[in-house]
Image: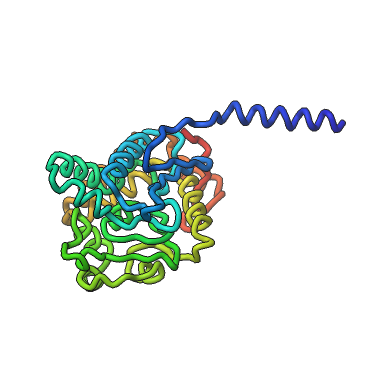
Length: 299
């Protein structure tokens, strides 16, 4: 009897291994990819430099996001930093001084920097979460703002320190903080260079939540698992809609949202609308105001 049970367990393990082969991700010089059941961690990996962003890191992140944006095994993307820092911002030595006498290298680094931190990350097709585990300074604000959600350690340190060495928050950082913070806080922190912690970041709208450092990953995973239970098409179209309408007037927004809603019906392979209505009206198995429908037609 014991032998039969052991054989069954062994067969199940073998079946699971066959069903979920290990993914061979590309290897990057300054970036790591780690996975956990559909949740992909994209990690800036220069811990000895507090993950300061060098030209090479920008190139690597650019390529990694291109790769993951069409990766069917990624349901949710988490952006974070290795070690005790999220990112100390641009690497002053390598990004600024190192390209000062090479206009072509500076232009290439700038394009890669802007592309992954905003253009590609803010339009990533799956839900994105910034997990701020420590220092987050200057240019690193852009990728935090680009993510759909941001959760920080309550003891993480944030700062717009550019003014302290004689420049403005460059790239599009000033534009980013003008959107996620209110005007008074954006002006205050950008002109004083005063650092603030994760709890304060939550109070001023820079992040959604601030939790003790020991609970940070668990809180991020909780949100990521919740996103996995929602309709992927509905989540994607919702986040795209909210990002886009911020820059429209009311008539433009109304036209855009009506078209977006119609388009969703045609691209949603799971028929989320049909499933949700049937489970609510016919089965009475859930209430939309209190929870989500059960995804039974996963694509």
